[in-house]
Image 1 (cartoon, one colour):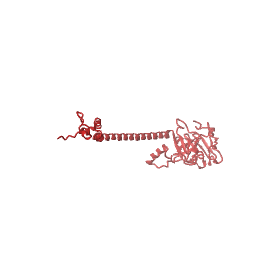
Image 2 (cartoon, helix red, strand yellow):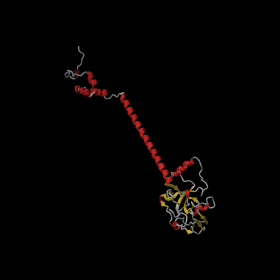
Image 3 (cartoon, helix red, strand yellow):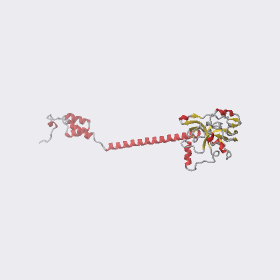
Image 4 (cartoon, one colour):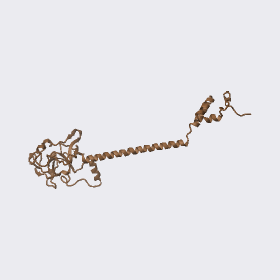
Length: 310
């Protein structure tokens, strides 16, 4: 007795014959290919979908070790690429910051530098808290400080015997901060108006009279604080070569060259100690100004010294 059960016995149709007759193993395992799926679907219409589902699960859904290894390698490569991009971005940012700091340092050292006005000794031209931009190229290439200029200078050796700032490791960082305009200038830096230059004779009769420079009276009404006298003390000085006679515009509150007569240096500021010419007030906005040389100083041209030179 035969135990073979033809596929056709299930639906009553005649069993297929010849070489194309599929076996049960072909109907199940052959679903891994498109030809196998077609053969199953076409031959067994009733149960085909069930058999196709089995074929897809076996032939398509399986994942081998090679696939897992490939995905891991791909993810590692992506992580490495992301790390490289992050490092390049950080490096570029550091380079940019370094270039900006270097450019700022060069500009502050050789071109222009910001300063803050600490007191009212130059009122009403400058007020406490004003921010100045000092032109460091104004006297470069052989130029001289001129009468009437508002200048920022180091007062060590003229207004001060020595720096009041303590020496130590922090001094280097403090100096760098000043050069970058990020720290206050310190208590050795002053801002005043130049009244006399090397070779000038500057005199004052005291209260009630004007200053004279080389015998010519000086009209200071355009910049002196309202109600101020040119000087409450009398003096008669000759500015040495390479020196400057400095006075504040708010004369009654300004400690300037007058206060250092008789001291070492005589109150004269060496021209080499000038940091630069104060050309602009840039802050606060309501006090923006260009600090031009007063026209009244033009009458002193040709009277001596170098104050009439560019």
